[in-house]
Image 1: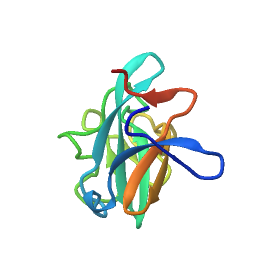
Image 2: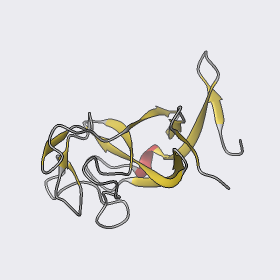
Image 3: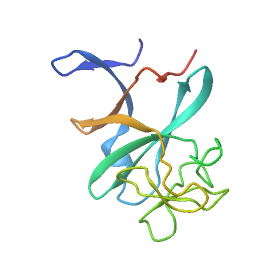
Length: 132
């Protein structure tokens, strides 16, 4: 897999997303291409509470992308991720919907690692690398 990196004892594949410096607390997120099931999709990473979190870029209410402008996932206060279409508010640290039409639903969390000033994500049984 070009551009991927093996880390950890299990030698799992981790795919680079961006440098750590590109993610500012409560600021813009970084989108990246992936495959969800059999569909082309995007994932995203954001920084909140000093940690990096990543999710499939798909609202829990209706499967559409969240960001209102590319990479803009936070509401104006920088405390919640927001779906630009439905106004659903998601807790950045859990992906749980805290208000809106999908109350109690969750974003699909991605496995994220920040190491040596880089952010990586790891594919799983549903979310994989983007097709060529």
